[in-house]
Image (cartoon, helix red, strand yellow):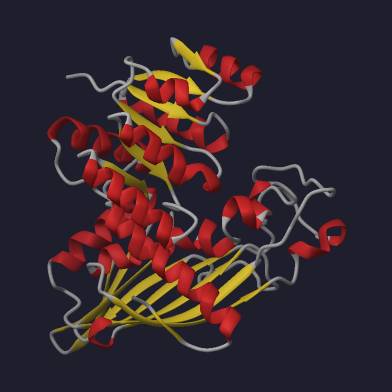
Length: 354
């Protein structure tokens, strides 16, 4: 069986998926985008035979077996649900949805229609993540007690004034945009312990300045100064997990701190050893004890192209009906942490997570 994929959304992240599909030898049968000029141009560039200007037309097509949803966050849940109702398996970009309630509706659709639902937690497939996972599964850490999840940018607000900074379309700022990556990755490495309570605070110190926001480059830019910025640009939280494990979470699009070793630092600390690495870095460091000495181990990394790995794993699940590498249930768990941080910040206190 050759799985025929359809891609909804040919913007920046959609084009990353197309490049990964080309590199992995995965067939893209059709694309859909409301921007007709861009859809036609991208389809020609990637030699894609079918172009639709209405996502529903792609969803209803008999020439597509499974769908990649790569559009603004607002549309993740409705398009994924529509695709599953039409008998299509779905790879949905992160975050899974805007809210936990939307995640629940997606999970219900997947169960009702017996569909594969994979969430685009692409960082799981990086070389550092795969290496860290292997050492953690060998039980080198012992009893886990604390986790660090950092993703800082000094001046990295994407598409200022556009959909990224418009809460109604994005659901929030860096917490739901880049924080989602590190939350998922450390939870994945820790085996997804149950979330108990969250104490968090979000801040909006830089984005609302709009005209006075100082930056050097901008993903999804240029800025639209007549647009909206009503989301946070930094989020900080302490997450309490089952078994007394704690997670320190920091995610920022903008902040006054220099670049350095803590910017994208992830770590899991146990009573026998600890493991740290940079998101998208090139080194994993294991701190442990051997023969009465403190030692650091730095294993060689195996090359990995994370977007290609993600697509290959999705296609494998579609073909075999095996559980996807990043499940909808895990996407919901990540969303529950994000939602709890926002609730805690608004309430000014620690909140319970169901």
